[in-house]
Amino acid sequence: MTRVAIAGYGEQLIERYEAWSKIKDFTVTGVLDLSNKTDYLTHEMKELCINSLNAFQEQEVDWVDISVPVENRPELIRLAADIGMHVTCDIPFARTVEESAALIETCQEKGVGIHPIGSLRFSPAYQNASGQVASGAIGKTGVLRLAKGSKHPGVEKDIFLDLGLSQFDWLLSTFGSVGHVLGKHIQTQNAAGDTVEYAAVTLRMEDQSIAHIELSWAQPSGSASFELTGDSGMLSYDSASSQPIVLNISEKVQGDVLAVSVLEREIKHFADVAHQEAELLVTGADILEAMKVAEAVRQSVETGEPVYMERSGS
Image (cartoon, rainbow, N blue to C red; front, side, top):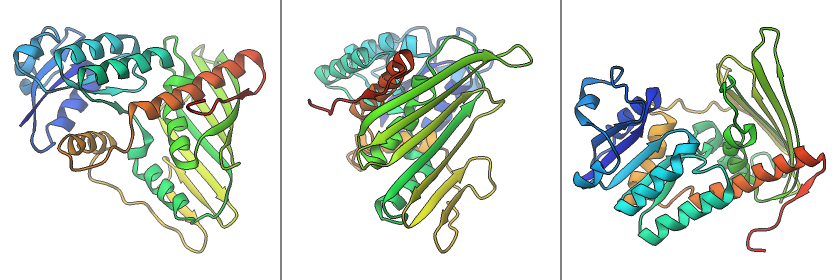
């Protein structure tokens, strides 16, 4: 039985606990609530609460799942690696490519794994779309349109990193590397006086397709959509639609509604990898490549010019 500890707070802490509790041969033995407010936790979680990550060492915990703000992630990742615990952590691991790469290297040196949580590769709609593209269902791809929106976080954050990172990772995994990027960004206030942000990103992909990504922190709730066009058809998805995924060729195909959440799919995948029952679908190195795209887009916004990407290894 693999012993798991969870570090976080709020609803995400409860979601992580519930997800891990469903994984076969894994048991949650510790909960670190960084808010120091345990009144919202279930009785079972309160029984597992500890005061510091160091206490996990005494419990001989094998794995820690980290779901905290990005500024707190590096410290917890390093501590977990020093103790010898494998790590799952929300993306990005840190604010910069350099620090994230250093954290991955630290885990490798300590002989522990570090796995990213938050990739669209586990979302049924996006996973379905990747498979359709790979099978040639829409032919040679041309224009790709993606959109992601949510409520403004209320604090200073990077919309390209915090909202766009998963979009960039999925594009890289489905269409190959990025040649160059162009970004635009605006932050203002709406009629109610609330801060809102918008960003528009254009990527020239390795296969010569053009990706347009719209990012918005101006919506009351989360939303996501894409429209992928090729010379043989179009694949579209809208999270707000009653029939969210449609292949417009000769017939419509509706994606299956899974009984498990995307988070559960992610966690189960990494658990299967740990038991040598699956090959990794996404790695920390993959997220680093997506972070490089986010940083290039930010640079483009600052300069007003396109930014050309260096090929990996060059």
